[in-house]
Image (tube, rainbow, N blue to C red; front, side, top):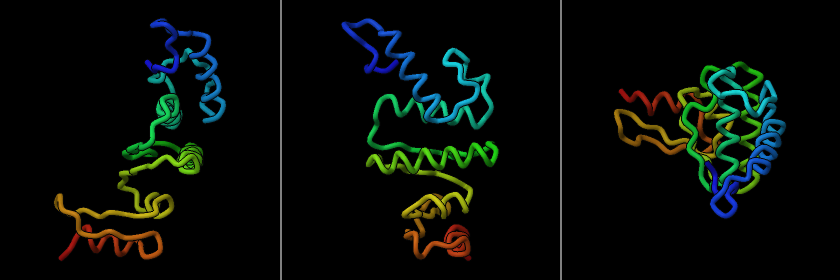
Length: 139
């Protein structure tokens, strides 16, 4: 429950519904039913609904762990677009992903860990799949 919908200790249901409908449209969640239980949505729409929940509280930093795992290509593109919109709003995002193309396409910096230890910090210009794998699995 977000504090944004409380008025005098009571939930403002109309305000809550308006915000839900706005985010459903913004994030292209299907079906566009604010009363549909998130667990009954497809994987991509579940991910979008979670991003929507975070947008309600206007966080400054988001940690996204495997944000597109198990979703179809169309939903991935939608999620990437929303992540980019969040970045334009000066939101910091820490993305944890096992998908190297996702990291290379979305991140300004990539930290590589091997056996629980930081082995490299690569900026966008120097990061490649080969370098990441080299640092992730040193000989």
